[in-house]
Length: 103
Ligand SMILES: C[S@@+](CC[C@H](N)C(=O)[O-])C[C@H]1O[C@@H](n2cnc3c(N)ncnc32)[C@H](O)[C@@H]1O
Image (cartoon, rainbow, N blue to C red; front, side):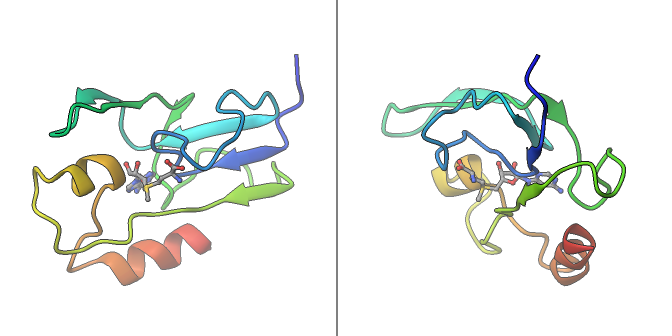
């Protein structure tokens, strides 16, 4: 089995990745989702681990690289394709949430 040296803590639908099954990587997100967007594109969010970047369920120092691409949006509509695909920041807590992620 490949050694897991990388974690992507907000993997979403893994668009970042050339190899979406990269064997050395743990793919994490706080949700699982399979749906169709308004333009017909399929959206699949299927992490190896369902977890929260504010409290990552691994010991410090477990990985050589942490990929961190949290939601960037606050005001997208709840059911918009942007929110479905990329998630949303909490308007009241986002600064603390991101601080916890980096910590
Ligand atoms: C900008 S998207 C990531 C896109 C991804 N980099 C890609 O290549 O497709 C942000 C992701 O963070 C996830 N997310 C939001 N809050 C989170 C949390 N507290 N912990 C883990 N993931 C979270 C969302 O579900 C969403 O899939």
